[in-house]
Length: 147
Image (tube, rainbow, N blue to C red; front, side, top):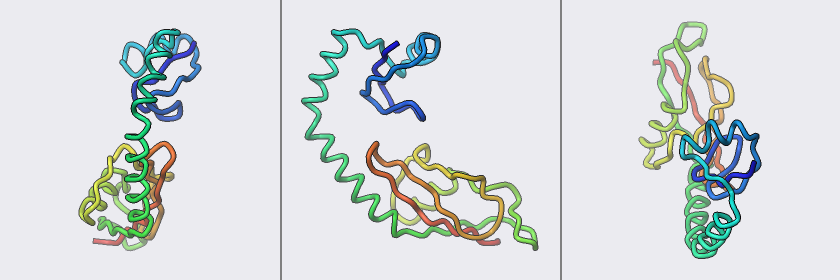
């Protein structure tokens, strides 16, 4: 089944892409959740026209994302966490805490765009990936220090 995505769906595709999914996934999840519409010939023509009209706006958005990525790649944020004497954190560092630390540094990033590969459960330094645009991503260095 071919569907046109109405929003970014992680591990599937980005907004306004035509993707092939299994019938049940499209019919029972994507379409009822308003995340996609059925890719009929008329819907494909409408999508093509909309993309043509939006091309210059997308170039501007991509340029802004690249500018933000350059700032984020140089950024190092510090997160203070309660930890034991052996260096283990009580709990873990999540994307929400990384987003708040980036915001304190003066940049705004959607917390849903941040991915922390492995759960950070000890003091030290790690990298957090941030997906700013479908072609632009950045990496922020996060240092976790004891309270």
